Image (cartoon, rainbow, N blue to C red; front, side, top):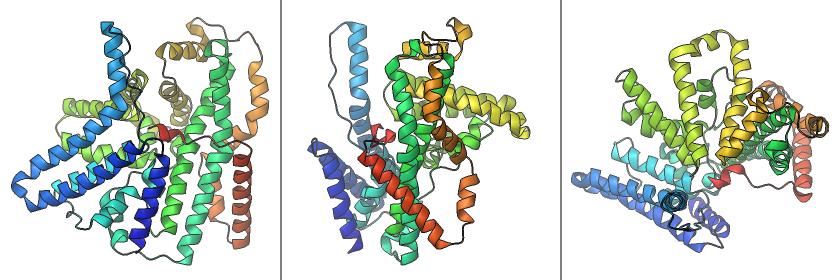
Length: 438
């Protein structure tokens, strides 16, 4: 009955999120049925195993293309050919990038014989639709939750642990990500051409903290809910901002997405087993797809390309040197992380160029804006959040929390975080999660 209750609740949850676009709910249900039937048929008809696998995966890829990229391609065709406005104004179904990747991973695992096809439609649909991670991950593979789908135990300790993780994630989102996100929004509203160099750097550091604590907070909330329900969802972040190289950063950031691309794209392409040329090709494909996965836009492609070049240079030129000299690696990443997030965040390439002239005034723009000391106002307003952001990007506060042995102190701290978060939500700090758009 637990699986049935969880399925009904999760479907209601998704239906409410798609209430204005009921076709999204229908597509979601159809995609689950297609995956389930395709896996069963792959085992029942081994002669047609590959054909069934390809058709089922194409179903997902075509769905993603239509909803995420069709309008972008039509707009580009219109601008090149002069045919006028061809935009379809397609609304992206919430969570499609995440549940699509889970479906493809399940099909690939069954196709390769890594797992047996699930014979219970109930258990499979619970795996895909679990509300806690349905909208924005972590991306969960079927083997990671197979045991819990068949038999799971829920006890008081798991509920307490899950509730604590959930509240802590809520606090990171509401008390850190949302306030710092306001500074980035204010910088965008002012206009990049009007920012001084110090304010431009402050704003992109603010966005860097916002996207981290926003997504890390969501992942913790999903993991906490999973614990309360008896599921042990995989970790999605491992203090990425303390990395010494971009290679290390992407092993620590959005771990489940990186694992997905490594397991289902990079390794099947040959990984690094066929020499340097093929390794470079495979890395290029992975990072181009990573950029495209995040959305339709030239800035996402550029972001993926820039990351590919950085990772390539680290792999073959200076990565080992940075790992040996930690202080230099941390300094390198201190500046590089916000620069890559700027490419990710700014969808207009012309405005991106303007923003970089503000970050680096020797490109032709002055250090100061028309408001010479504009950054002082924002620094005074946001410095407590920057201090907290730097602190919670390290392992120190988490180690301190783990060393607290008095339960009442933990309960009190969690209550304060929860109460403060609810109050901030009530006061309007209720920005949606950034990864909802993907």
